[in-house]
Image 1 (spheres, helix red, strand yellow):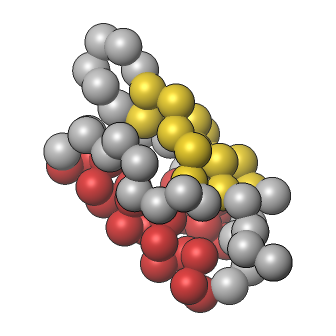
Image 2: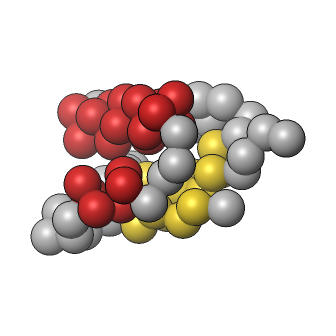
Length: 69
């Protein structure tokens, strides 16, 4: 299970992406980061992703990824 904290822009997102094993997961998380930075309104993209939102600016604070087995 990989936990990514995407709230702080000072965090190194590239190193978070390297913690994820497969290329498919990297692409999905990179897409979510891009969507989160541009629009900030991701309610629930897939049932594999669970996000907790920040109440001030409506951006995802914590994103958890559950692997499909």
